[in-house]
Image (cartoon, rainbow, N blue to C red; front, side, top):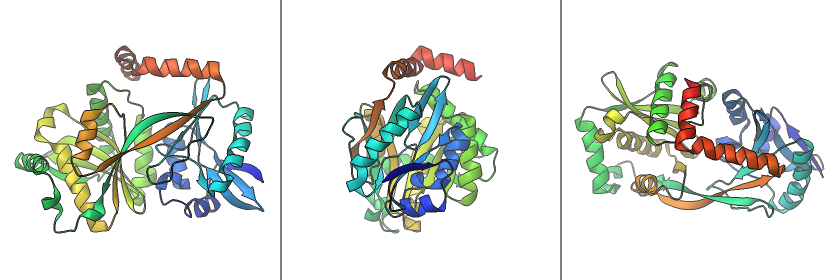
Length: 332
């Protein structure tokens, strides 16, 4: 057995990955988004036996000044392939990580795959919320909603809001401002730069593998959502909204639109993505649609403990109220 990697994964990787998952986050096209949007170097590791790929790990190395962090893709990325090879594959991978000078490795399991906790990694829990779209027929979606959901949708409609997809590139700037507004309101770090959203548009939206939906009234943009499409699932990757219109419930109107379109297109799952287990209000919002939250984990291992400790302290500072203000000031 031997370990190798692709810096620019293509057909061979895609054919291997598609045998084990239909998630777009494991496909080579997603590596282009990560490279162009985050400025990282894709490293898609593979274990071969007899020339055939039997296990793989999609990765992106991000450099933060002196730090080198390997993410097993974003938002989901973990080992795929024949599970019987995982232990041997990880042992060989760890030698590669050290040889490459990686400070920290982060693997995030998907709610669509069987959990595999690597023994030497530390788990960080999160909640992932999935809505089973198969529960709906085209004619009974409205009846399946709770009364509070129906009231919220009616309120948005009564105030004259409608939903439509992006039609031009400059709307990515509009969404980015909505995203920044939400992050500031929630005192959270705006982790994704402007070029990330440009990359989503250029690489995925133009190929109809993603979309941005807006709740609009006249020429006013009240809220927006970035959707990513896997073969059978819709992934609710980002959202942003203007505080001015929150009480008019534009986000509820967008989700109703997503559910209707997903059912019409035969999708099986609306993936609301991960949440902090302690963010109960966000979990309630996701679950009120009839979805179910489950435990998922990010598995972390420090290969250079001192540097990783400094890195984690820096992240905590950035996540603090003062730190987020400093970052917003720097980005202006």
